[in-house]
Length: 505
Image (cartoon, rainbow, N blue to C red):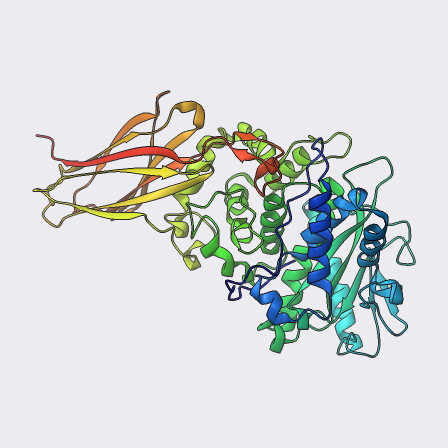
């Protein structure tokens, strides 16, 4: 589910944190997590729960909360399982919805090409006009053509005519009062396939600007692109790590509705705006997983949009797919592009000057720095020790004092990082009169390395040293919100950085 950025109150006791379900080959969630999954979905979808209470808990992701509950179904007792099945009821199931959230009048259906739109002509769930129904149907078919025909992703798993025919079903329903744009949910496991499932989607009935703060068609376009990609993901592996599911769904908005740019609101929370937060963190009360669509934007800018599909194919749980979890899948694909460590350090460096790397980067914020040092003739040296968690980075800005005008001035960068098996990396980025220079710092097996770059004020405005922890080592299946539900083995890695302004004779 896409969601706007809202003020998140301190009172977090309204919602329990739900561990992500396990990717293929992982242990099933335990009874406690199954009950938590049920409680979370009840909280999210209960009409009696006010928008204010949802806002106080950050309004967690509905699509993935439904996914969590779907994965937990086998662990629920008979009574809770009946309740859960009621939560998966479609709006056209009417009174079968145990939260009383079904349509209360007979629904209409209009189908074209690959999809059907379902709606009601009266009650609060009614769309504003038949023209709006046509708009939804037309655009949903465009989403299908773009994501499946053009980009080549797998079709959603067939639902065995649950909506009246073999086409994919989308329901229009009043969701704005709950602060929800829309969601897609898995519904039935594919025969003989544990981690593949059919599904359906629910979108707001009108996307009223008064509720969503944007023109209705814009909200529809980005929501449809994002949510339908979740339905596609259910045909790859509905148990995949949630950071991969959300970041690539947000990336997909750029492929389908590039001009809307709604996903820019999340940039301060991903690694463009917060490089010290790990790439694979999924935070139900935060937005970093949405902001990290930029990682896949970087990959697709360098290697083509097909690279994201390659990741999903390697992560997929269907016959012939890779059956790998998120970071392992990404790492395997990037072995063909110079290796994960090199690509990830380049990504971290790119975020210090997004306007020079990303197609729309001039409109983005610049990755912040942890410190800014100015070197002078009298104080030409600075040093510091910095701790960095896995799949994250820190930036140090170094500026030459106006007195360093001689063209011979250089900046010596010395890095003493952790041992090489933990994948430390470093990069130097310099803003010059002619543009931006990028200089990788080669680290040896002990994590030590150095570089020498120009530092005269006649040429250089600033230099940023990018320190990177590119570790993808995990101890898996601990029911966390990281890759493979695991614990990172290389967090809090210490880097010593020394910079010295030198003037060779």
